[in-house]
Amino acid sequence: MNIVTVSFSRLYNLGNYENEKIEATALVQDNDAETTLNAIRVWVDVQHMALQQGREEQGEQQRAMYQRENYLKELENDINKMMEKWSEAKAWLEKLGIPLPYLYAKHEVSGDDVPF
Image 1 (spheres, rainbow, N blue to C red):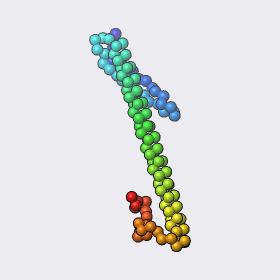
Image 2: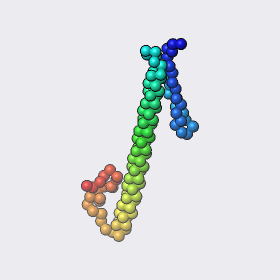
Image 3: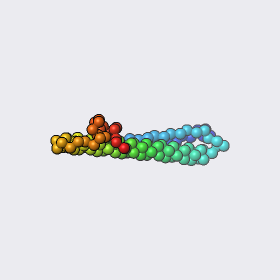
């Protein structure tokens, strides 16, 4: 019997009830089906490793983005708290009749209007 093609497939468990199936079919060269089968078996494993690495890198990028977003939210909260404190301090100074420094007396300070 002469084998013309060989196929190999493998089902990988990704967790969370997810699977990934990778399959390859190749023509047999020089009537050596075992060598061809081993070659496509290695190819399937390499493809799985490459896909797995891509998923891991994507996960790392998503985690980094999430951390940056949280950091920006924390900074915005800090800015808002400082603006509230400034408003309280300004009201306290006005209540005592103490004039504001020249830089603050002309206009209201906002988050984008930093005096330095």
